[in-house]
Length: 191
Image (cartoon, rainbow, N blue to C red; front, side):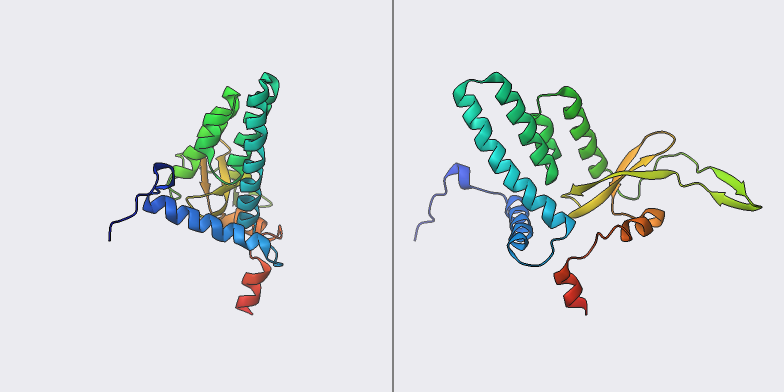
């Protein structure tokens, strides 16, 4: 029996198929009554907004309304960034500053988690106790497709170097107290 021909627009690589299946799993969770994890919420919301803004952009292009086209491209880029497509967002967004911002986010995600800047942490004496001042702060939480989860965008307080990685150290304690983490389904599986 001859192998059926697959149209070019439907052909997908193994990596693309795996990524689509993972994203579908995250979106599928949004149809349950369980509380979504932050990653599930961002991916499902980002995909929904992407579809909405694509349709709005097509309408604006058909109407020839340049202002709505620019606004539509900006919204589409922000939706792509919500679910971790920072490269796509940098291509679509009309503002060069936002394009650079999205490219920098992708670089931070691609940087190895164990790679830190060369800055040395400051030490201070407080009530005869020497303490080490944390070198980094979490600028914001972003979704990373590489990690498959929401990660902290760590920024060095001295040089401004960025790395997106799972929350760790001092930041992990603060993150745990923010009410983020496991969904109700995951908690029920454990107990």
